[in-house]
Length: 364
Image 1 (tube, rainbow, N blue to C red):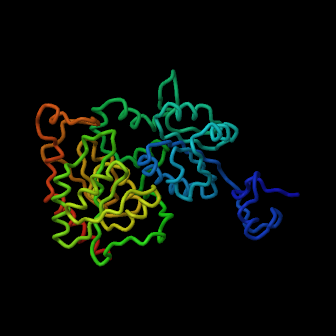
Image 2 (cartoon, rainbow, N blue to C red):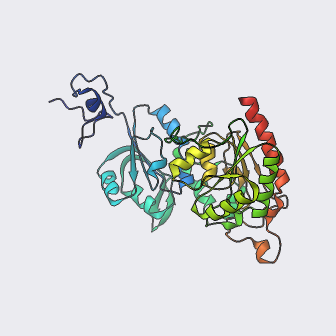
Image 3 (cartoon, rainbow, N blue to C red):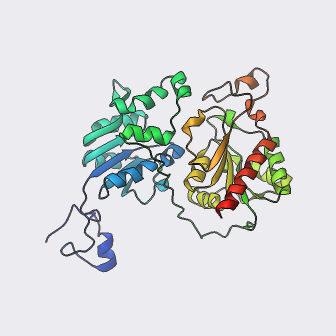
């Protein structure tokens, strides 16, 4: 029997899709697609960082249209269908990767286990971060900039490159505005009770537990909701389990709609209902960018240049600046002062929403 094991559909452990669909065998199969290159991407987490690494897929597909692309991550659910093999970071996946020969292997992650794995993978060419003397190390000059931004705060603060731009640079490629790749696999499965005759504004009220210094005050959220509803917007509260009680309370106080918290895939579908999303720097920010929503991003402790909005939004920062950089606790508040996030006023955000709403209207 003539088996075409180099075909991108061939599995070995189970029938391929063309065979299951049409009963064809390898001989004379019209679906045969020989693999030209095997490419490995290692980007384990965090979820938002995995999402904002997906623009690299378009570039790789353009250069290697017949490549078989593997991606190792903690978040396989978030990867688009353009990835051929989505591998969770498990011992089993590690065995598979160690026994597969790659043409290209990228590690965009500084986690030591990811760096160590890239050392062990067999590939003709490796790019990104490896492990040396037990610590993360750049493999070549292409990754030095990104490496140094993670080592020295002053270099990180001076950076003017966006995250996707840095990822492309690590890969030895030029970023040309390639978009996030984020599928909505739940589209149409839920009928959300929203008024689509109005502009739908999603307010993501939380910011995770790692850096609570990013949090916008609850009284400001409430004032913004009241202003939006008065202006005729449909207002939907977004968040996870951590924001559940808060969102219930805000909804009760203002009349804004809150439907609860959901699985990641259903949350993506909820964000997809929105015309505009308001958020601090969170996973929801990346989901909104991935679904090409208009975005108002409230940022204080990060370098704003790292965020690529693709011209679909604006970044608002405290008028008095921020004294912290990647710090969990606000220095001003610790010294008895007022947190800088209180310098982003509800009226300022409402004006930004009005501007974005006009752009939504113009595009429709």
